[in-house]
Length: 421
Image (cartoon, rainbow, N blue to C red; front, side):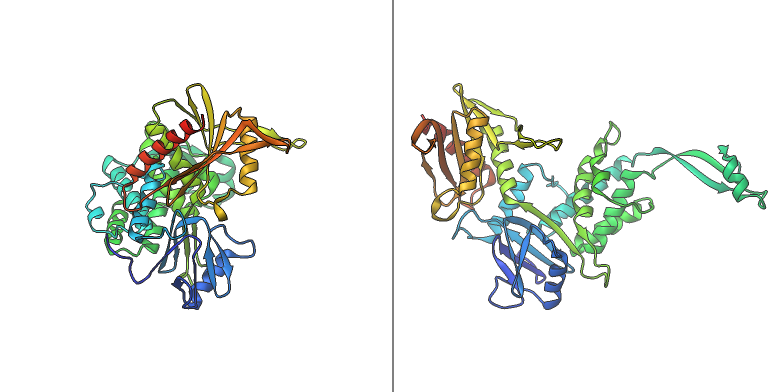
């Protein structure tokens, strides 16, 4: 695996970068100013502003600031940093396992691009999908057009024809239907290709995107919004577009252009490690858990005020083994002194009561395995063994494969369930 280029800063979560040499990564004053402007008055979830720098939190991934790529990697515990190449691979593999994106392993580009860049992998995956769509043939759709024309086709819109053509008898304001490539899906593909051409720093990928643009029919611009992607419906013909649209959504909605100079854009492909760890544990158990049942994640409303929408509880994983019901809650970081925080325990108590859990477990990653059995107090008087809540940690060697970690997660959780008896 190649090392990051000179325009890349690689740090771990909760580390800081800034203009001072005492930080984990060095920024120029201009780059810091871009990040400060990006944060704005309300802040962003990815980092907090500190003196002459920024401090990252539990979000990992890539921030691109102009030509600078800031890579934020996970780590399971203090002192677990190890080899950054291993953690970069782990993050990419975790994203793959939870279905965040797919990367073709057979493309020629895969052999040439920097394997350490999450952004490059997303871009490559999108280009591979577009290449497939072009090879298969972009789909066409019907669309209606109203326009002034010198030829009479379709229907004349008399009100507009009279208004616009009172002195132009050679024209007709008509309404007609065409069947072509100009529709929302292809417009978004075209917009994303042009975005990639402007932000990409890989020469190999730049050559590929330029080739695709030459073969792609020119499209009018389209405004990308959350609602546009949320309301998108795929049918039999458009289903092959789904994966490309997932990446298009990620790139277009997380791109923040610099409206002043046009050079210091910000692209944020950042992922909450708590959510990623939750999904990773869930898919690992779904794959390996054979001695019982992994229930699909569901939520229950538990509080409502007036006509407002009810607030719901949603456990991370519910396991059924030997007619015993376990609620598993995952947390990426173990608090200080290896003790769960009050908010975590209060949440687990609610899970225990509301989901009829026979045993509730808090699950953390760590440098070593551990299992500590605990109980909730009954009205503050004594321990009540009918409300058990245990804490477990699952170790991981960053040099191991992601598949080995999935097997370990299943094995240790299964052993933990047996220890609750």
